[in-house]
Length: 95
Length: 156
Image (cartoon, rainbow over all chains, first blue to last red; front, side, top):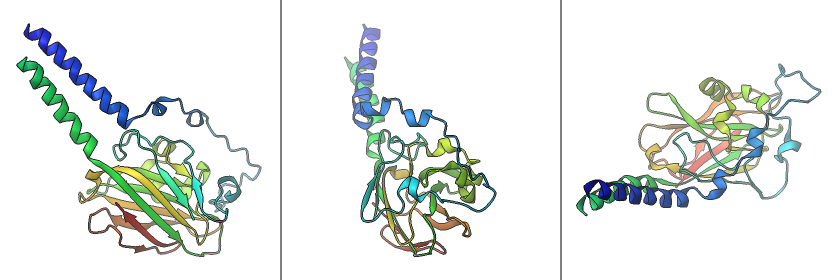
């Protein structure tokens, strides 16, 4: 009888964890992130990477746009590095 | 029934603190009119012993330029997996970037420091342009940058 109760309690506890987990981590979290699955290949013709050429890609990533720009990160789920709340999504705004 | 209630209490007690211990933090970075193209910015955190704890944001999408963010590159060995899901556009001169993140409360008042490395094309790199301790006292207090960043503020 005791074992049955313990089993039942463990199931209930797991249920609670799953319920809270579903709040903190919506189903979208589990969707496969296709962008992160793609390996980016540098196909630029100007492969003089030794030169100091940081961030010459304003056109690529909208850094030169005027006015207020709401941006979505390229991939919406932060890494599980212990710094972020599970399932949280960054919000970014550039003015 | 007692074991059931005991187990339920334990699992609930273990679960709730984890849910309660995170909050929204907004990092606002205003750039100077430095007269160049968009700057790459790497936001990352070190712990009380100075050890890299994790990345919070990367402004700039092309990995080949990350080498110019030398503090971040040294800390991560250039591992782009560290910034999966937390990468956005570079930040133009004179513009302002606000990033709102749900961060663990344990980052504050525990010796953690936020670092921001910056770099722009054909201009000098600025590793650790901003280094600021994450504390409750530091909330809302602007920190001046030394090269590309005019000022940086975090709020909770």
